[in-house]
Image (cartoon, rainbow, N blue to C red; front, side, top):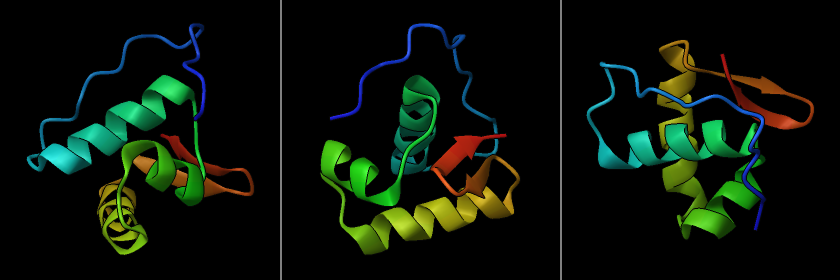
Length: 74
């Protein structure tokens, strides 16, 4: 399990996110400061296909970016 990054500021959920799972993933990534798909799936007990679908939506809306170390909020 990834640790909460206390140095991060509070994260506000974007208004265009309606899905509870999309909100959960967004808040999780904001709380840990970035993550890999594998860590996200393990910590949130999500199937990889579900996580990748939601991540794709978050990326297409400009909320996430993918780097060599994983996904981060924009």
